[in-house]
Amino acid sequence: MFKNIKNDLPASIVVFFVALPLCLGIALASGAPLFSGLIAGIVGGIVVGFLSGSQIGVSGPAAGLAAIVLTAIGTLGGYENFLVAVVLGGAIQLLFGFLKAGIIGYYFPSSVIKGMLTGIGIIIILKQIPHFFGYDPDPEGDFAFFQVDGENTFTEIFESINNISPGATLIAIIGLGILILWDKVLSKKGKVFQLVQGPLVAVVIGILFYVFTKGSDTLAISADHLVSVPIPEDMDSFLGQFSFPNFAVIGSPEIWITAFTIALVASLETLLCVEATDKLDPEKRVTPTNRELLAQGTGNIISGFIGGLPITQVIVRSSANIQSGGKSKASAIIHGFFLLISVILIPKLLNMIPLSVLAAILFIVGYKLAKPALFKKMYELGWKQFIPFTVTVLGIVFTDLLVGIGLGLAVGIVVILIKSYQNSHFLHIEDKSNGKHKIKMTLAEEVTFFNKGAILKELDGLSEDSYLEIDVRKTRYLDNDIIEILEDFIDKAKNRNIDIKLISQRGTIENPESFINFFKLRPKTV
Image (tube, rainbow, N blue to C red; front, top):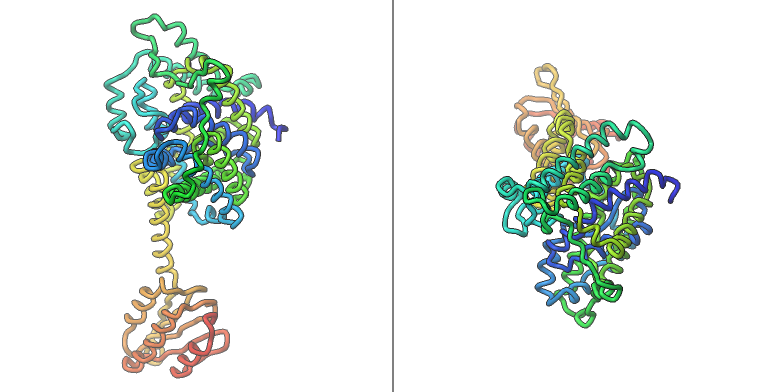
């Protein structure tokens, strides 16, 4: 696990700085205690990291569950009651894993997965613009279009332009410059620049800027523009931040409905993220999806037992890990230990980090996910790839992750149906033979009810006094709906003086009555 530590350690530091504000922000957006987000991040890193088969995926609290959590805490009568649903949700995920439900992740089209990555990249950039300028009413980790502060993604940007904090903006620009310089120039100059990552340097500069500008009237960064980790006075107060489930409510139907909702949404988000991270992985490793569900279920049970939010594998942290050179699961595990150690030992130092510097780090993550060249590449692949890709991107930007993916998947299915309609048969028209037009219809390998319209249109369009040759030698499956169309056409053909010949692997049939017997006697496999 630790043979790539020279790559994994620097990557884990970057993931730590990305995860820290997201853990806190998602907890805030969920209406949960701030510490609950850190618990989920720690458990997601250490526990799920050890159990998962993913080498580059990182787990923690997910923005996609924030709305569910916010609603559930209110309807279930408190956070301790909600934790029961988290524990049960984890148990249901274990059941999904044992039932091999992980295979679902393989049924999402590549165009939708690429759209998901691009859409998340764009939404990261859009959501970080206000934080970059020092405008922070909406918490980090709120990735929905309609935000918890009452604004939407674009109105928040306009508001931030009217509320620019000079100090936060200046250090954000400096941090962004450091990141670009490190990525494009310094990382190629020596091993020391590869070992010490640009985000770490940017964060250190950000802390120093905050310290040295405290007394400035214009450049000072106020507390609401900084990371806000809970600061315990002693170990007892630290342990007092943990919450525990109230299992007295386990018999409530609302608890079980919430648990199943958490399990379903968390599993789906995880499987989508697994598919996406596997595509980003430079080594193209394949994550065992059923094992991932077992790991996530175990993580959610533990997180729920000690007061943490629900956990999923998350693309923002995973992509930051990949972009920073993470090679194995050690990176995710170490980032979890960094979270644990830092909230115990250095919470005051963490609370000196400007959110605008972390926004600059996330800018780079978002840009690498949504490079403009990808749009050109998807366009060149043709409309069958470009339309589901674009719909997924727009859906994520203007709604949220799951709705965007659902829209992209729906469009992808429509594209498949259109292509199925078009590819059901091949029609070849020859010159007149014996005074009749000769038309050869070659049916596809599989012809289903999706193809009814196309075949019916072709048959109804045949002119009178024609000669039709139906070739089913390559056909392995004929749906009963298609058989009924052909049988009906045989009756119509007599009235339109259309002669028919059927060519199958069993030989050639020219007698219409024999056609019907052929279709009736044969099983669905021709």
